[in-house]
Image (cartoon, rainbow, N blue to C red; front, side):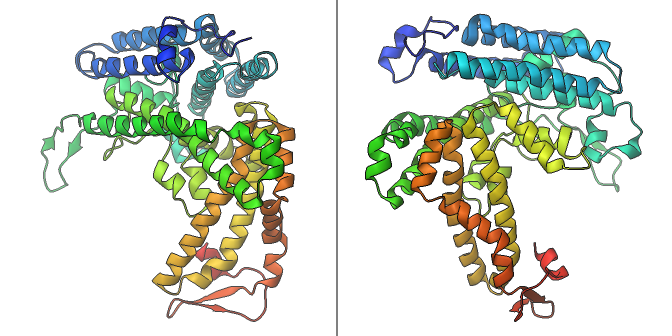
Length: 487
């Protein structure tokens, strides 16, 4: 069976595969996104909110979203309509008090069935599959359901974010499906909130500014041009694509499963290889997310008042050069982080972190490698927090020591990131455990020591508020208030 035997998308470009190192599914993705980039410019200019009605914009965005879905996925695109259709029926039929939970359950159940079918019946037989867009649609319909539920609450019951996104009116069928299947974000996101989408459709996403209070004049500011941001992001996407295509074949992650790699390479080489291989794999995500961001920007979506980065899904610089695990995680898949925060973390009073972890894990799928990454990530998050509280006060005395601290934490973060994320790419439980065995579980051991042993043997530091100097006390003990403020 060939790798693409089960691929249901268009075969129109199959003849070009021989001239590139790309399979037809990858070519379809790139071509559809480039078409979307051109359509986005038309969407912003000829079909801008000042020139056509919201209904026309809804229809245009929906029709080309359907076309892109069918071109890339064939009959499987029915799932992209099926999930929101079922969820819309749930919204119409369930009590307002439970509709948000019912939609979340329904969407996650539908997505889970697709994940399991993909995992056990198709077994990653091709690179482009329907679960990616379906994951984005799941975020959209569930966040909309929670926003409708918030619209029934009193304001004092909600956070500021919940107040901002609360909806008082049920979307029409056209509004709902155009939001779910809009062409700028159908293939690779980002998943935006419904209110942001409606503001974009109706032309309210770019505000009118006024002069300071001393003047009563209103200055109408022209819509900022996204062309510079689009060009920059397209250039970055091209660089990421070249890195992925040219270098990843030289460092395939599958090599770590080979007996020669397992038995005949050194401890340090294994670490080095995992770092390089996982870094190159990330280039694929950077390419897809940056290209999708450029498409949204060209459509006029993503202005935050200063830059075209409101819905950017990744901050490459802060992820790659982050000086803490938290900073790197916060810079990765930012749309999903916002979604989890909106529907779980800020709503669950008990075990909010655990609940967020569980939902995130199920949303991603059921490959064992995912869960090894998530569990390790949770462990290392606690370890990093512990060591930061213990050690950082010793390094804030001078600029030189701060720089040294940043260099150390940057290096550790890079190694830890490779150590915990290779399982996410490898997917397999047994192969991942074999590699961890060969690495002696070294970072896991260090993480446990950081959590349970280090606080007992490292003297705590107390900040001298008069001169800003961290002074080590002779005896370890509970964290002081100063330590909490430092952290």
